[in-house]
Length: 124
Image (cartoon, rainbow, N blue to C red):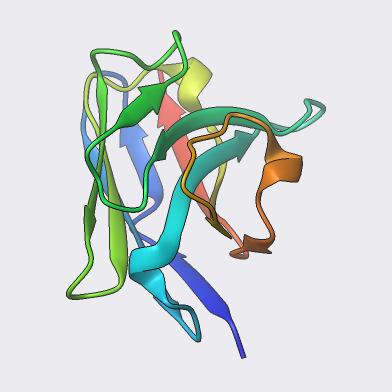
């Protein structure tokens, strides 16, 4: 049974930092590309960041580039999203996603496995 469990969300003020974690089980983690997506109320789910299965290549949405850092620890089957200089516009539910692929993708339909999400709220 595949599980992706996000943690680390919360309520912070603009300018603060948070680190999200996504711990997986039931996957051959080292063979999976990973992604983070987010969805704000009334909006569609949008791409945030992605990393290849080896961790050598990352991709970021323009809105978070330079502020967010995506990393993975294959020994712990876990990925992290370090979020700095948070803005009110970053408020959303953040989802972790996984797919068995050698590529790196921005589209949600490219990922087969999803977590339940963790809420991030940034007050201005």
